[in-house]
Image 1: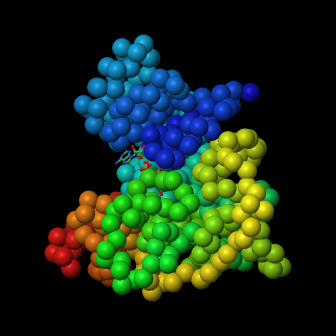
Image 2 (image 1 turned 60 degrees about the vertical axis):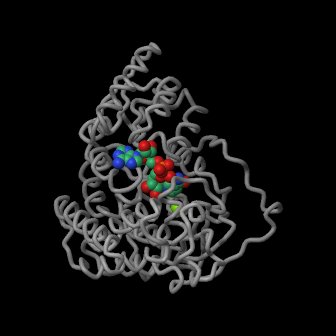
Length: 394
Ligand code: NAD
Ligand code: MG
C-alpha cells in the first residue's frame, strides 16, 4: 500500500507534535509532505530533519530564510515557503491525502478551507475555523468530496459512537441527543468572587490535558466547551437544545451519543490526544496510538455534575451565539481570541473575559455570514470592538 501523504498545518504545536508522534510509529503508512509553523524556526528545523518533508512553511520571510539556510547546511532537501498563500498551497498539493488542521485560531481558516476545496481528508483540530465558517466548510466539502474527521477529543468520541457508515455534516439517523463532557478546568471549585485574582499562570494549569495556551485558558473559562457545543452543532447537525454539557472531572468518558431507544454510547480512554489523532489518521482502520491504556479499576470512580453557567458565563454566551445564528459564532470566537490574548499578556483581568465578549456579541449579533467575505468582516469588526473595550477598561 502506498503511504498516505500528510500535511500538518501547525506541526510545532501540541496537536502537531502529537500527530508526528503517531506518524513516527507508522513509517510504512504515512509520508510527511509538508510541515508548517508560525515562527518556531528551531522546532520546525528539528521536525524537518526527522520527517524530511518536501515543504516547510513559516509565516514571515526572514524566518523562512533562516530555516532554509539551516536546512541547507544540514544537507536537507526540504524547500521552505512563507505566508498564508503558501500555506494554502501546501494544503492543496496533489501528493497530500490528509491535512491535519492544527493551527490555533482564525489563522487556520484559509489554509483549512483550501484543503477542503481540494477534496482532502481533513483531520480537524482547529475548532475556531469551523466555528467561524462551519456552514461554508460543510457546503464546500459536499462539493469537493472532502471528508471532515474530528480530532477534538469530544467530537472524535461522538464520531466514533455514530451509526455505521456515518459521515460528518449529516444528521445521524436514530440519534436524539449529544452530551459533551468537560473536565471543569482548574477553577471548578473556586469562588467566583475571587476570579479577578486569577493570573495567566493559574489559568494555564489544566488538571488533565497538556495543550497550547489559548485552548488551556478557554478550558478555564469553559469557553472551550462553549466553542465545542457550536463545533458539535456544525459537524453533526444538532441545535443548541439537543446538545448537553456535563462536568466530568476525570476526563475518561470523552462524550456520549443518545439514541431514540434510550441507549447511550460513549467513548472512553486516557486523556491523551494521540488516541483521537490515531483514530483520524487511519480511519476507518485502527492503529496503535502509543497512548497509555485505560484502567477503570485504577480510576475507581467516575463523577458527573451540571455546569454552573452563572459562574462560567462563557458557556452560556456560546449557547446564545449558536441560537442567534448568522455571524454570532464568528463574533464570539473573534472576541474570545482577542480577550484571551490580552489576558495572557496581562492587559486585562480574567473576570472581564465574559463581560467583554457579551458586549461585543450584543453589538454585532445580527451580522450576516453567508460568504467568506461576510465572515471575515464579522471577525474583523468583532476584533476591533474587543480591542476598543479592553483599552477603555469597560
Ligand atoms: P498550539 O498553540 O500548541 O499550536 C498552534 C500551532 O499553530 C503551532 O504550530 C503554531 O506555530 C501555529 N500557529 C499559531 N498561530 C499561527 C498563525 N497566525 N499562522 C500560522 N500558524 C500559526 O495549539 P494546540 O493546543 O496544538 O491547538 C491547535 C488547535 O487544536 C486549536 O484550535 C485547539 O483549539 C485545537 N485542539 C487542541 C487540543 C490539544 O490537546 N492541544 C485538543 C483539542 C483541540
Ligand atoms: Mg475538546
